[in-house]
Image 1: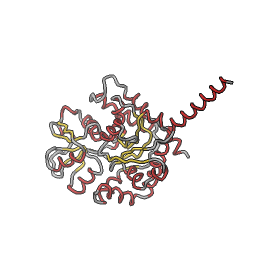
Image 2: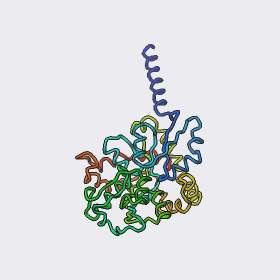
Image 3: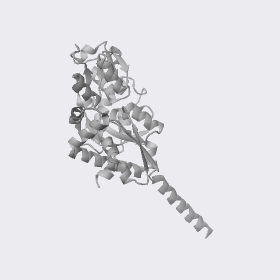
Image 4: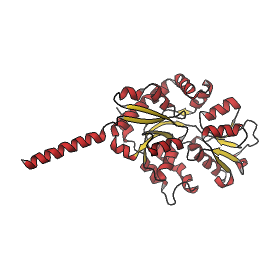
Amino acid sequence: MKNFKLLSTSLLLGLIGSYAHAAIPNTLKLDYAYYAPTSLVVKEQKLLEKALPKTEIKWVFSQGSNRSLEYLNSGSVDFASTAGLAAVLSRANGSPINTVYIQSQPEWTALVVAKNSQIKSLKDLKGKKIAATKGTDPFLFTLQALDTVGLNKRDVQLVHLQHPDGKTALERGQVDAWAGLDPLMASAQVQSGAKLLYRNIGFNSYSVLSVKESFTQQSPEAIEAVIKAYEQARKWAKANPEKLAELLARESKLPLNVAKLQLSRTNFDQNIPSAKQIAALQKSGGILNEEDLVRKGTNVNQVVTQLFKPQYAQKVVSK
């Protein structure tokens, strides 16, 4: 009888432990960003507050993938909106994170030059100053673009500036080119006549939502709840392009035509991390090894495979 009681107590504690392990935290912290429009929808429509009334939802503004990943790795946020390739770079360099949802497929970066620039091709960038935010999609885009004409980071002067400062530096003539990011890039085009020197949607990685690996073990229910909210936002964004543009313009304090230009090159048909995204990131990931951006001997293909955890989105989207 005594052994039975001990066994019953152990089972009960185990069940309680499992329940606590899977429970949604009292507070959820997420970032929002102008380059991730669905995050603005989730925040503005209070989709998480409505879905999780007992949970405090905290929002942190992010200027770029590098900041977003800093917030995630430091514990300032539980969910980070970043570029896919930036997430790969972070995991490859030792941050145990997982990508659980695809927000969109944007063409959000290109190499930008001033209206009256004499630079006409990528080869003309040799020896020139290029503003780029290290560890972000525009930075990695720049390296891949240079590689297409046989150049690398040692052939140019990379000036590491946050995205808004890069735009300002281009407009003031302090740099020759800028690895742009929307909506700032669209703003530069519309407001100062900046030109897109080089575009390649294949070098733009997906907009993704990532969490720490430990969070996937501790709070799978929270991940599903957040993905459900982002999925609602994605569907709303597809159905309401005008309202989405108005929201982006209002939040970013940019003209409506700038917001519309950004959204015109954003595809909201993606949601579940799949072989398609894995293949695209593995193809782009080669630049990480070539440019010594990851530790020597890192198998980037393996890192990409380990990064993705599609089961949460699969469960939510299929309902």
